[in-house]
View 1 (cartoon, one colour):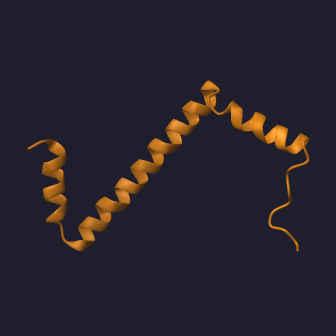
View 2 (cartoon, helix red, strand yellow):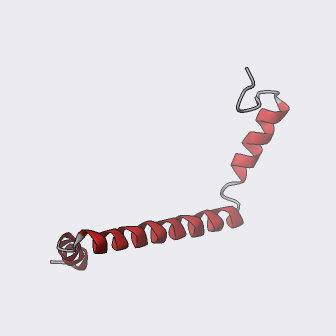
Length: 70
């Protein structure tokens, strides 16, 4: 049995309040990892294509105000 399987078994045995604490920690950890990856990708230029795409949409007059006032 590997560590992940051991953790899964231990987590399944937790009472609801402790499980909720673990779940909240995991969500926070996942968000922090996502933010770090996004920062890394942005700093390295991997997301520059998104800015270029948005600029082309703006120049092509294909951008609408949202939410629409219609």
